[in-house]
Amino acid sequence: MSQLLKFPALPLLAAGLLCALPARAQSLPDAVPTVEVKAAHTRLLPYKELFYPMAKAVQQSLAGRAALAVQLRPARPGVRTDDLAVWLEGGGESLPVRADAHGLYIVPVADRIAAQDGSFSINKKPSDLRANLVLVPTLAPDAWTMGEIRRLLHDVHATLDPLVPWHHRFLMWAFTRKLGVSVCSLSPSSYVDVRDGERLLASYPTSEPARNHANAPVYCHRFTGNEDFDPRARLVLPEDAQVLLI
Image (cartoon, one colour):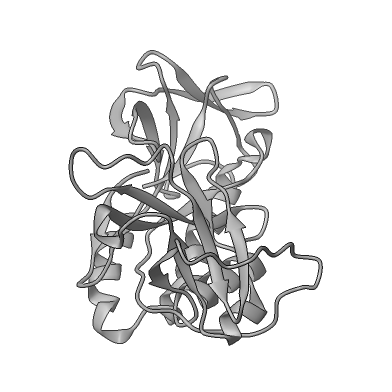
C-alpha cells in the first residue's frame, strides 16, 4: 500500500489515498484517558480541519472495512523512529496515540480535542519526520468478496472526495482513479484464490512487487473491482496476507 500523494505542506500516502492539511472539530468521550501535557512535546500537525473530519467520515461510513492512520517516516537518514511518541493534544488534554505493528498511528475521532484546535505532537523536531495519511483496510480475512471490494472502492471515493479541498481534487483524482485492493504476501509464490462455494473460479499469484506500510517488500495481486466475477465470489487469502489499498 504505498504510493505517495504530495501536497505543499504534507505528502500523503495513497496506500489509502488521502491528503492532509491543517485540521479542526467537536467533543471527546469522558472515558478517553488523558495525561498531562508535557513541555517536551513538539507540535507536528494540526488536527481539526482535515484529519478530524476525515477520521469521522471514515468511522461513520467505512467502519469495520477501513481506518484512517498517520504514518511517520524519517525525513532524512540518521533520524531514529524507534523512540518516537505521538500525542493528540488540545485544551489541556493529551491523548497518547500508539503505533500498530506496521508503525501506523490510527487517527482518533476526538471531538473535544478538535473543538480546542488540537494538534498532533511528538517528542522530536517536526523537520525530522515526513507524515503520510493512510487508509488501511480492516475487513476480516475471511470476509473479502468481489462485492466487498467493489463496495469499498466506491465508498472510499464517496466518503473522502467531498472532504478534499478543491485545489487538491485533481491530484486526488489522478491518484485514486486507479485505486485497487491488493492482496499481498511476503512470498512471490503465494496465491489468492477466487471461489464460488467450493468451486475454484481463479487463482492468482502474488507476484507483483510492492511495499507495505512498514516499507517492507511484499508481493501482491491487485483487484480493481472490474473483474468478471459474481459479487458473492469470495477471496481465499494467503496465510500471511496483507490487504492494501493501492
